[in-house]
Amino acid sequence: MKIGGLAQVAQCTVQTIRYYEQEGLLPVPERSAANYRSYGQAHVDRLRFIRNCRALDMTHEEIRVLLGMMDQPAGDCRAINRLLDEHIGHVDMRINELLQLQSQLVMLRELCQSERSIDACGILQGLAAMETEIRHPRPTHLG
Image (cartoon, rainbow, N blue to C red; front, side, top):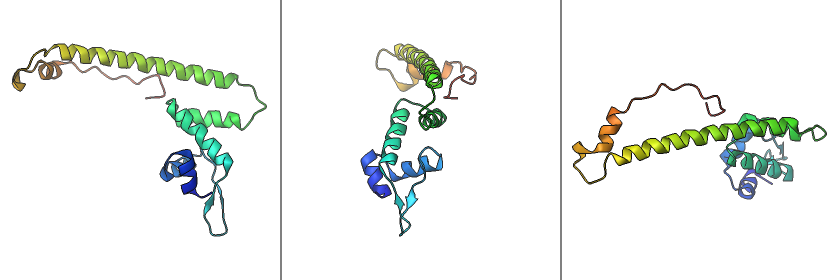
């Protein structure tokens, strides 16, 4: 099948397929006599796997590692378990960050409980007075 057919079957864009090929996540397909890319079921399956991993917010590097392990089916899956455990840790950290963000937003919202003029808006005043925290690098794959 051609790239447009693969995109349709995989429910993604042609640009996404080309990007995954450039990133080395999707193998470069064979070319037809007319120099068209020719994709098969293996591409469909691999693309589905990549998209499922992305839906779980996995990085390209995590996906690359998983694909490498899939290509060696005789190995054991301890490294896969470790990768997923690390990813769960990243998700836990992100949940905590989002809960803190939610708390800040709720506190800001409580600063303006009634309709006021914009120059008396507690939310705007709170945003202007809020101290910006120094951002430290995250120890997660999110950076």
